[in-house]
Image (cartoon, rainbow, N blue to C red; front, side, top):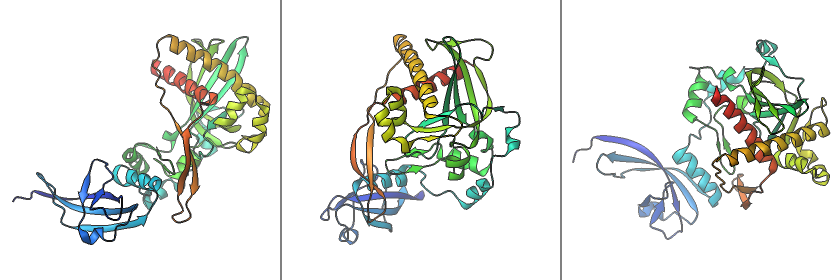
Length: 348
């Protein structure tokens, strides 16, 4: 027998009941028999993390197991663990990466060669529990039946320079991953939820697109439209999708109940923000109808809403309720604005 290569592989095993001779790995297609000395301590709904030493190329031989973790869990927690251990880079950022970004900050020197939009009425719309706000919107009436829409994206590239430690880490992670009970960020929190998050009443660096549109939301190709460039903004309102939806619906009763979910700057008023959102929604709907008429593909996948509660034993969030998420007009509006921005970028 020729053993050409030896390597270690991680597995998550899940025992369905205490009498089971088999365990299921993080990949649902894999099933393994576990030796009795491991099985006798395995109870229902328990998760075991093994590092398995294997031999290849023609077959796999398990000859040594190292027990890493052993804990009773609920299924929701198990699935998050499986994803993280088998498929995701869920490790904390290294000390070197954290230190490389810890001293970064936004200063007035960073505003040089950027268009100053801090006086503009710009707002963000995100899920209630979001801590990272990476895009913002604005709209103004510039003439009869003529409007100027702004889409503002956090300028992450200002802080994440090519070849740096944080750049290499971001390349390795590729994207932020949103699980039911947690977020695995692509960037350290000092960037993702602070410097690169368009928080209300904070000077933030952005890359912006402006387009002038008519009453049918047709882009007007004229001087200054479209306009792309680096900017600095100061968000005047932080809204969640529900609040923006009830603004569109002009539902004053619901808005009063959700007042804690709204953060409005002293530079603006709730009524001004509501007027902007209602106008933007009206234009977004016209843009959407035109896209669909021209044959746009509509992928309508169902989305779920999860209600979480902290489990007292493991201090993790567990799902109490999950149900189809309500279709909110505000969500569709934001989607249309992002499509508008991407379309204009693609034309360049």
